[in-house]
Image (cartoon, rainbow, N blue to C red):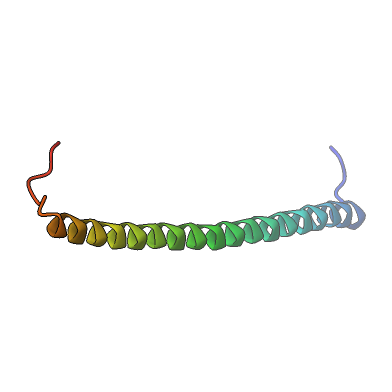
Length: 77
């Protein structure tokens, strides 16, 4: 059976410390990517809201044009 020495424990702990450091770095990178995705998603949501606003404005204009031309009726599907 192998003898467990302080030096052996120290080497194992050093290895574990290095691996934990790598994991921390990886978590920081993941957090940065998630933050970038959140920023991108907010921009996409704003773009979609702007599109809905533009469509609503066009719908309002179309309704006024239809009323003016007296072609208001049931929409055909």
